[in-house]
Amino acid sequence: MILKGPHTCVSSPISQDHNKLGSQMISQTIREIIEANPSTPISTIIAHIKLTMGYTISYKKGWLTKQHAIENIFGNWEESYNKLPGMLQAMQMYVPGFIWKFNTQLAYQGYFWTFKPIDGFAFCKPIVQVDGTFLYNKYKGMLLVAVAQDDCNNIIPIAFAVLAMHGFFFLKNLRRYVTLQDRLCLISDLHEAIRSAYSRNRSGWTENNFICVYCIRHFAQNFMRRFKNAALKKDVVNMPYGMTDPRFFYYYNIVRDTNAEVAQWLDNIPRENFQKVYIPCSHVLASCLHARHNYQTYISPIYTLQQVAKVYEGQFGEL
Image 1 (tube, helix red, strand yellow):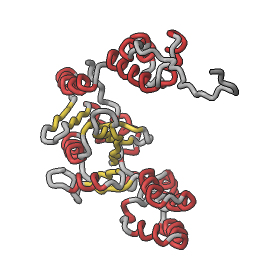
Image 2 (cartoon, one colour):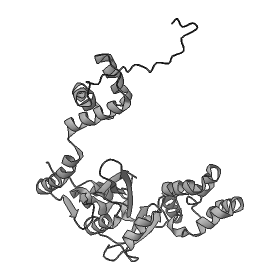
Image 3 (cartoon, rainbow, N blue to C red):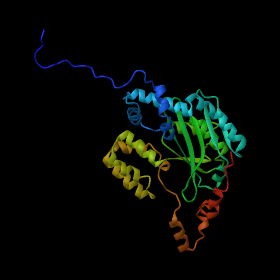
Image 4 (cartoon, helix red, strand yellow):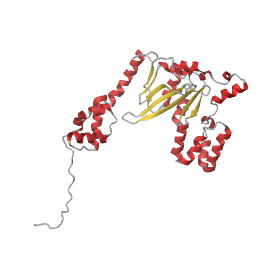
């Protein structure tokens, strides 16, 4: 039979991959690439295999190849996680003043550690900022860090933790081993877990030894997450920076007249927890000189060069 007319059959595309080209074997060929840059994109790996072997592998095979290469170079998740206690124990033995704590009471094991130079915190501003980031790989949880500031606004990390979403273990050890003095200002986000952690018994944080204020950046993020109003965000952020009550209420009235729901949300947040007031500045010195007052009566000793030098007296021991 002779068929007339154009050919209309649609053939399936021929794969440019090779079924014998496994991800384990390919991972050996990209070892140097991953070792130099573990964040190498999958598209780069696919292009490399095409150039060196003449085959175009799938995205899934490229991803598996990268995972095998990372494991061959750096070890797998179980090995890395199990090495952490031994590494921290070794640092405690050989690094003077190093402190670490292991929490076995949680379903997810938690680790807290800090270094000897935390002694310099006593000469920093009485401010502690706590923040964290989520862990997205096999072991979920959070990496938490506490930082301080010296007189020159330099950021000084003072404590670290890897744990589940359970801030009590971190804040308790932070108070016990690092932030020993009273009258501290703890800066955090609006997350309920943080407030619940420092409010618990035996946390060491009480109404008599600290106040908690909110990070303005997180304050803005929470506003955008809830209201998604970029135009009003500027006025909301300007409120905490109001150094005087008239300035604060100037922006508050703008927000209230624009969106009553946002104003109600702001009313539920204590103003003293996010308004930037009572922070010394250079104008204090000028006013004291003009009035012939002793500025040391009004300014904390931490704003002196002698105190700043003491922050960095502590040295890291050799490992």
